[in-house]
Structures are given as C-alpha cells and as structure tokens.
Image (tube, rainbow, N blue to C red; front, top):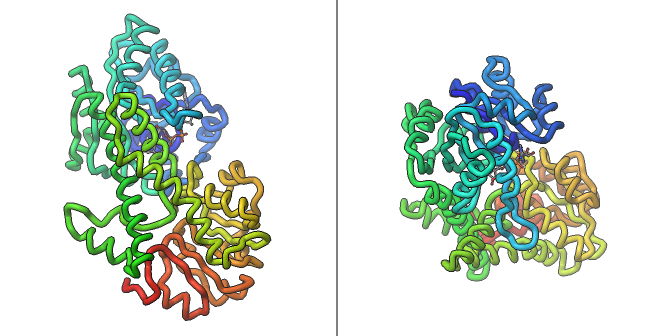
Length: 440
Ligand SMILES: NC(=O)c1ccc[n+]([C@@H]2O[C@H](COP(=O)([O-])OP(=O)(O)OC[C@H]3O[C@@H](n4cnc5c(N)ncnc54)[C@H](O)[C@@H]3O)[C@@H](O)[C@H]2O)c1
C-alpha cells in the first residue's frame, strides 16, 4: 500500500514509521519546512524511545520518506491519513479543527483515483462528515471514502502501543474502505490485535469516551488520595485493593498532581463542549475537568504549606517538568500551573527535566534551568518531584540533603518510601499516604 501521512508530529511520525515497518510505502508530509528538513537529515524533532532507530532503518530500507509537497504525495497514495493537531480552540474549549479542514482541502485538490482518506487526529463527532463535505465541494469528481481511525498510542511507549495495540478502531461509511483498511493493518490482525469496524460517528466518539474515562479514573484516585490523607488511610493500598477487582483494574490508579499532556485536558474539554452542543451534557466529565483544574494549583499550596505557609523569597527545586516521563512534551503539563502558582506566591524556581527543558523554556522563560537534580537542589529550600523520571527514583539522598538549605522533600508522585527518606533526615510530604510506612 502507498500511504501518505499528513502531519509528522508525535502521532503522524510514529504511525508513519510503524506503517513503513509493516512493509507499506510511506510518505510523511508536514507543512513545517524545518521539521521536514530535519527529518531528511536524520534528526528526529521529538523525543520518543526507539523512534530514531526505527526511522533510520525504514528510510534506509526505502519505505519511508519525507516531504512538504502534499500534491505529489497524495496523488500517488492509496490511503491518506490526517494526523495534524486538534488543540483546544482559544476562548471556548472546542477542538480547533482548522488544521484538519485545511488538510482536507489540500488533499481534495490532489486526489487521483480511488483514495481512502483517514482521520487519525482526535476529532469531535461529525468531523468525518465535514471532511467528506469539504473534499466533495473542492473536488466534485474525487473518488474518495472518508474513514475515522483514532489513535490510542501513549507518548513514551508510542511504538510499542502502535505495534501491539489493545484494539484498532475503524469507522467507515463506504464498504470499499473496509478492505483497504484491513490491508493497511493486516500485520496487526495476524498478531491477533482486534480490528473493530464500526460507523464513523461511533468511532469518533470511542476515542473521546476512552480518554474521558481514563481522565476520570485518574481524577477519582486523586480525590480518594485527598480523602486518604484526611482519614489516615493509604491511597496506594486502596488503589491496589480496588484494582485487583478485574472490573476496576489496577492501571491509571496512581495518585498524583492531576492529569496533563497533549490529550486528556483538551479532549475532556472538547467532549464536554460537544455534549453541551447536542444538549446531552456529560456531568461526570464536566466535574472531572473542574476537579483536575483545581488540583494543580492545590499542589503548589501543598508545597507552600510544607515551607511553613510562606513562599516569598524561598527557592523551590522542581524535579521534572514534562507531563509524564519518557517524553519531551510540555503541552498542558501540570508543572506549568504548579510553577506559575509558586511564582505567584513569590517563590524562585530552579528546575531540571531530562528531556523537556528545550520545550519548557519556550513556555516558562523566567525560571532557572539546571544541569541535573543536584544542581536544581543547590541552595533550594525545598525539592518537589513533579514528574517520575527514573533518574529521580534513585537520588543519592545523603548528597541531595547537603545541597538543600533544609532537608525538605515534596513527592507529588509517591516514588519514595517514607522510611527511606526519613532515615536520611528529610521531612517528607507525599500524596495520600499516612505517616506510618507503606508496604511496597
Ligand atoms: N500525542 C499523543 O500522544 C496523541 C495520542 C493519540 C492521539 N493524538 C491526536 O493526534 C493528533 C496529532 O497530535 P500530535 O501530538 O501528533 O500533534 P503535533 O502537534 O505533534 O503534530 C501535528 C503536526 O501537524 C502539522 N500540520 C498541521 N497542519 C498541517 C497541514 N495542513 N498540513 C500538513 N501538516 C500540518 C504540524 O506542523 C505538526 O508537525 C491530535 O488530534 C491529537 O489529539 C495524539
């Protein structure tokens, strides 16, 4: 199959290279000339484990190439995926579909022969209908089937998720697309990954419902963590105790500073807006969004409380800035709100993140970026673990302690054991765990 991927970001690039790995001929297209120039030079614009090696191997194998020329790429393709961004629209929280619609229009003008156009971006229900309308209006002679195929990969484990998905959801309105999409994903169905065919609107809603459910699960355990703190229970044991029930499951039950990242915040908000427009409000998700928003600033208050209630003039060492480990993605990271709230309270922030600092500098230019966790701790009055990068799990606590002005650690990811840090003389605050020691 000849495939074009419009948009070569986290989703477009990973999906594109994985399709090439399946044996398809793939062109990754992007309108960002610098990005395509870098890719042509063998430089990967994002941090994603295993991606650079896989891109290099498939370029060498002649199955993967890069271009800014949409016309030429689309004209020769059997399948064209749209993997452009769908950020929150400024002002009202709806998904901004301008990139998707611009791509649809560009595709329409370049189509030759029967082509399946697939929306892989996360888009609200009805977007597939609109993409089809745009294509037919721009090119009435186009022979096209418009499909929804939402992506479920997680940054940090993106290649593995793509190659070993729990399921592939494909929404079609034109039966001709079924065979083409089966062929695109044939290597996965040989590995017994279920391909679920459904209608286009159902497929679009599945993606939002999945993300909203996961965001709700995180928010649920975060509230139970606060309650655990109040009543003297241990949230990690509560999570295990409920998670061992198969109907609940153990995943996504780690209490923390609130969900962030490039998907959950914007997708929960977009679902709320879609549901309101259809006069079928999703109150659970509205509440999830509100609780999560409050939580991030509450984490800064927790730090200020640990400092004795006053942050003005104090220095805070922030360990981890990305919304989760193994990515350089800073979009909607809780760290942004936490740092802002600390600065609002008069604190000075020193920070270190293993991969996210280049992106963080664009959003938070006014903090001191450090070489490592020890550098960040130097002269700070408190250290705060915001992202659970592996290198923060095994700090040399004796050395770390000597660098801080006082041995104070706030662990928003519960990666340390209380007895361990207390043994080193730290005053330790975490999420939803009582003072007595936690069993691993
Ligand atoms: N990042 C994730 O973990 C993830 C997971 C599942 C789904 N998604 C969804 O996938 C979509 C893409 O997300 P992402 O994180 O890859 O975004 P991204 O911002 O990393 O990449 C989007 C790319 O599209 C390019 N682009 C925009 N308009 C274009 C156009 N008209 N023609 C060509 N290129 C264009 C941009 O230059 C950019 O490189 C979003 O809808 C997102 O919700 C993301």
